[in-house]
Image (tube, rainbow, N blue to C red; front, side, top):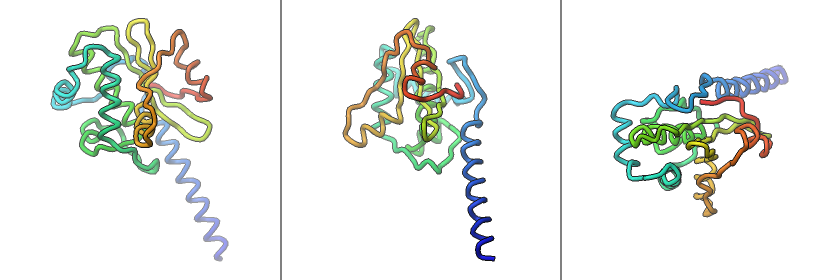
Length: 191
């Protein structure tokens, strides 16, 4: 009887683990527009907060650095067992989140400031990727014909460990998929 309970418990734990992974990878609908999407559902108050705190940046590149600095200095990464369906105001208020929260926050801020400054050629894509051991989210940012990679979560981790932060990387002519594949990652969704 004791063995049956142990086996049942293990099966239950495995099933729950698969359910959590499936929920993470299928939470949001795919959106390749690069602009507003399900992750950028913002209130007017959210937009005002973004403009008040980030409108001083004159280029997208400076804005990317500013957002990463803000996240690194003010936020904490929470345990992977924590599931948060991105909510901009809640992420700002809680000062914590997962990779998807930070990538989505960066997308929302860049999208609002681009609109505010009339930067019509800026598009941001939150990419969900499968790594060798896990899933992760980060951003690709297009500014005209330039393409950048930015990972606020990795930057936060590096900052907390006293390591150099890499705010963004110019990916040149690589497609998003080619860039991700060069790190043994596969993109399974865009927001």
